[in-house]
Length: 109
Image (cartoon, rainbow, N blue to C red; front, side):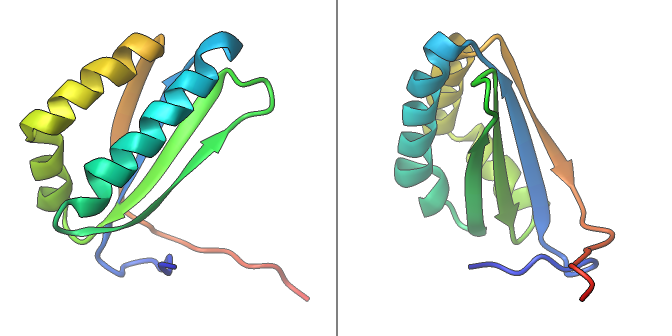
């Protein structure tokens, strides 16, 4: 598992997909496949997760990368371009956004 710390250097990518309950399962299957077959094999990939809301209308993919350039290189690969087209067909829209961690909060006992 990877650790989330402010100023630690890795790049965070959060991608939100808008879907319908009818296409949510198909999108989840496609995302699992792209993580297993493309993203997890890319240089600089540190880890990721997929989240879905209760209504199955939004899916969020969270990934961490050693460097911004690692993520961008994976995104520009021919295989990922083809997979992105499929993800786009299964969702109303999606947008990957790069973030840097500025603060982390934990429960107070």
